[in-house]
Length: 200
Image (cartoon, rainbow, N blue to C red; front, side, top):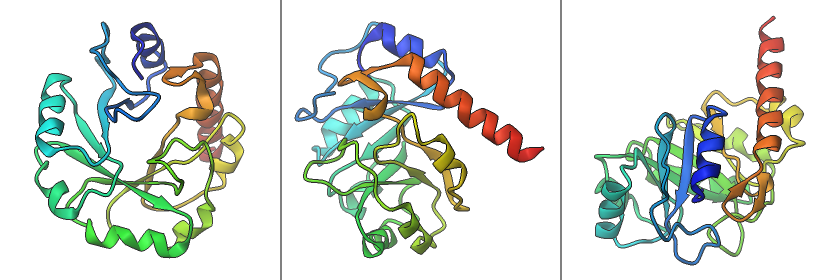
């Protein structure tokens, strides 16, 4: 996100985290400090193969809570940023891709399993979630990759003991970096209602 008023509106929906992309090649690149930054939601900065000192400086400037590494960053690279919570994105198209996690186990706080594509992410496409049956690590993960307004029922049927959240991005946008708060609100209400019903 990068539009101040949109950030404020989305934060009112009580997401746990809000993401800010600091990769200059992204159409969602945050080029200047928004006038409003989240107060209650955790701030996540997304970086792609960035110079580590630039990551550190940006994390300080934007008071980031979490750093998401979405490129080919090595385990050694991730280990140098341990003063922040770290999310390591892993691009997935097959069960074998999941095994990449093993090199990072114990060095990051979360994995994010995203759809493998030509760019560093943001394809709006899903991968076959069943391949996550092959994930037997200890690190919790976020499910990503083209999750959209019509996926609430599918998410209800997805179960994995290490899945702690979902990443919502391009399928809820009206333009790159600008979220449709109406669609987000309806989707989050659907998820909450399903969770409520499942506990009855």
